[in-house]
Length: 172
Image 1: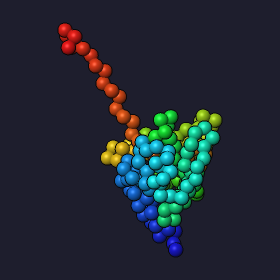
Image 2 (image 1 turned 90 degrees about the vertical axis):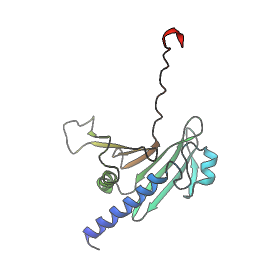
Image 3 (image 1 turned 180 degrees about the vertical axis):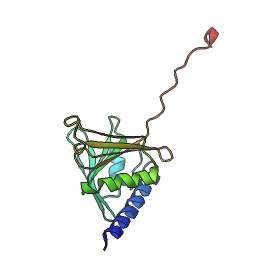
Image 4 (image 1 turned 30 degrees about the vertical axis):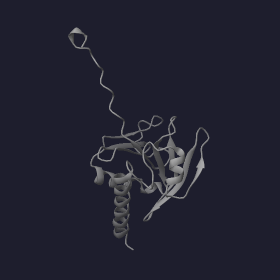
């Protein structure tokens, strides 16, 4: 298979995976729902997984879609025992630029996109890239980073801050 066709196939698989995740992560990605408890996720998560966690319970998994393999997958739960983040790393970090490009095609330009390395600030080849997209239609924040490989993080969009109530004149 030519390099061009491999690139096209990779892009199509990425778009299919991303759209499947974005359309359902807020409602049903592989059986998960934001805010579900550990026990609910353990029962409903359709990807083969195990239990883990040194500082709290998590569900761990690997995930393959098309010709993309993700490893080190984790369903994270907050102090209330609610699912609040899904993370996984691309098994082949050399494909990370293609993953960035695919997210850009699906979601448009990221809300933020930065490159930096505090240890080598003047070396353009030694950097960490982090981009974030918000998907309000599906209640997802997606972050892609090249720190320690190529990591994808999904989390629910933050809730709007409550408005401060200011009494009207006369205390009403």
